Image 1 (cartoon, helix red, strand yellow):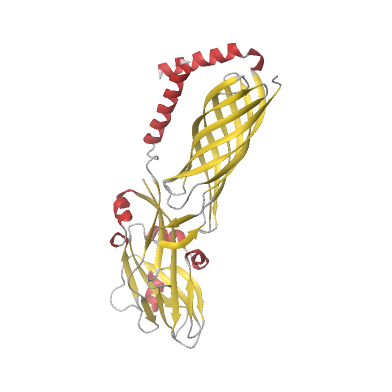
Image 2 (image 1 turned 90 degrees about the vertical axis):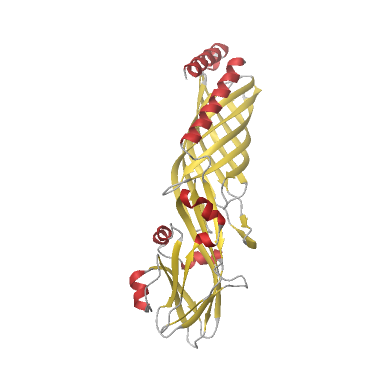
Length: 181
Length: 185
């Protein structure tokens, strides 16, 4: 843990020194990708898309965000020739990003945060909302105000009662930072 | 660069550790479909029922039964055949154990949880209900999900009013089917 804290401090110092003029700035971004349900018999791969704000404060960024994602329709080996509807979900949350941001070149980052998940499923005649969390990593690459953003994340929504739903999101997007030349 | 690599490695280790600590990385949702190999043929004078031990039908349940966190959903697929000339409104009750002796309709109502209702079948005809349609007839879902958590339950078929004479069977030769979604870890 001590090594991690020292590492974070070194990284923060290096970032602050390298980009004094962009110590505080903000940007907007949009993204899309694939949603991969993890250990869920009642779901298959679906799509994820959404948008976010990036509020940069030196080495860290705050990322208020929203996203829509879907579990694809699924089948059961025991019920041949029938397809069942997967869930539709949305999430509103806020992440903390370590790294990335409005700087030129390749900028890897770690990301984690909390969010409000809502799940709807017509097949199950079911709707539920829970607070969940996510963690992941990615990188931004670009120059000037524009940056391509590639991210992999793990998303978890606790279930009412016990258990949880989990997904892996692999997504790409574009960020635009204001006030960056 | 070394610092960044070390930071990433430590971040990944912390994330994996967190997931393992909360025990969530190996949990998930499982769907099983069981096909009871018997029909239910009930009349207002002689009731019929079916008792099910899910472990007898599905290895997944047997594998996970000690780690089941909650039952998430139950659906069914069946055909109801009305043997009388007048229409009936079929009902299905779920009990956690078999009623002793020769139970009456009132015994079932008094001791069971109403699971399916408003299944209207015209006289001398039949009605098919698919998994997708079954949600329209389900009531007391949370109570039923709790009741079947140990994997043992009994299904009793009755109608809202006498006389009645009907059979609950499968849509095809596979027999009626019950789909159960549960969370286990």
